[in-house]
Image (cartoon, rainbow, N blue to C red; front, side, top):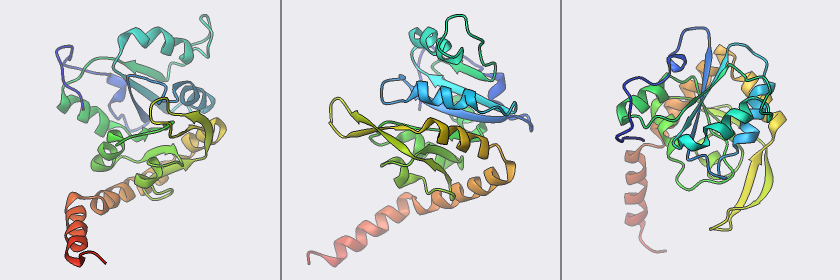
Length: 218
């Protein structure tokens, strides 16, 4: 979640649902190597459905030029995909959550994750998640239940922890983006996200912990 002095009162008009477009929110944060940004943009650009909209939420304005070049297909003079919007404003928490809740899909592929806060934010808001089939993402997302999982391609290791890193398969990600544009599938996954929210509730966690403690060592 975000809060800070650079907040502005409005974010992006296109992030509001209009009944026709299908908005995918990519919570990119600092757009570090952990985020497979180039692969995600390439996969989205290859999806031809004109209803699709991609909102890239970043926190670092200085990265805008790099992101804009990716949106133009890697070329300084390429054609910009007008379906993609970049937001770098530091939004107040309530505004950020409204933007998140307005999205049809949380597009969240990742090379590796720690807690993966955005995965739990999406679940809490009942927003389907599209990510790669690697832990811990696939510990929150059940394929076909509260989101779609795509294969992950080995991509070295995380620089500090040394854990295996994975990039999403670009063609599979494009296919999943095109699939999730279907309103019936999204409605099914949104219902699954709300059920998953109950399964992952803190009450269930504490109940399981109490049961474990009661059993004692053995």
